[in-house]
Image (cartoon, rainbow, N blue to C red; front, side, top):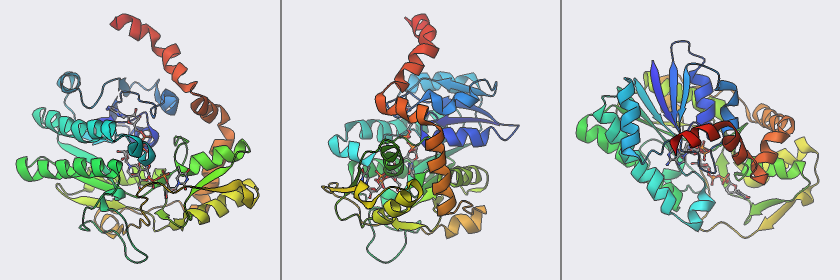
Length: 340
Ligand code: NAD
Ligand code: DAU
């Protein structure tokens, strides 16, 4: 089974590739253009596997994608490449529209041209917008995104569903809640706080800190993606989550305890513009139809995550200092020279 994964040098994509390669019959080609969020160190352990190949190609580049898909028949495309950070999208939405909207449409069209059997489009619970104190997002909740990031993801999600309706293209869309775990870029809440804690730096908390997120351990999400690929119904949407709602203040309390830091570590800063108040996922459809079941509880997941950042100081220090970009230059400069 040959699978093309996009965004495989990022946080979730690298976990997904590791999961896919546990299946002996699977070969993976990773299309990732290596933006600031991509990191070759995330897949260093996979690089020697003959079933793994990386292409430094953007999902907006139809010609380059055509070449990759002409070389082999692919059973599936699993599309994760995206600009993914809400705060960056508030600074400028343009790269978000380019990669998330234009890139997704490009990938859908190329996949269709080459007869790819199935496309799994990895969307997000943020397309539903925000909840009040009650209720859960279900698959047919209204699409009401509030940030440039989530609006661009909603655009790509709807384009994927439109490809199914218009052409009968086999597309499955997944919408997952907030992930956490190893290899997450330390601009996102949990790795930012853990690494700041390890450096004796403060933890910025936006506004009153009572916004709620529904946290899932990343390995549970990628297991769900594998199930969606194999058992999902074409044209269907599946929500993934682990019924684990926490306010940001609760996340802070739990992390302070593990890291044995004082409450003064947490410092209130101005709120994010248009900050969504609450996300909460109902994963019943994925549980019933796909057999999805989140396995890693919050205490265990947080403990594992903190341990990983404690044991991989070299990884996150290189990311925070920008030195991680040198890894590419060292390992791949011969390729660059060859291209010139
Ligand atoms: P990430 O930012 O860690 O990784 C994104 C990857 O995509 C990077 O490796 C980057 O180099 C690559 N990329 C960006 N633009 C590209 C382009 N034009 N062409 C090719 N590659 C490109 O993101 P993540 O947190 O791993 O999220 C992966 C996907 O999952 C995204 O689609 C995101 O919307 C979705 N998602 C994330 C979460 C979460 O909590 N992180 C939850 C639900 C869904
Ligand atoms: O819900 C899924 C989404 O989760 C994904 O689609 C996104 O790609 C991913 O980035 C994430 O979005 P959030 O905006 O929820 O995640 P973030 O880690 O940026 O913030 C989590 C919460 O913490 C949110 O309420 C904002 C708050 N926050 C964040 C940062 C970075 C702070 O209070 N302080 C911070 O420094």
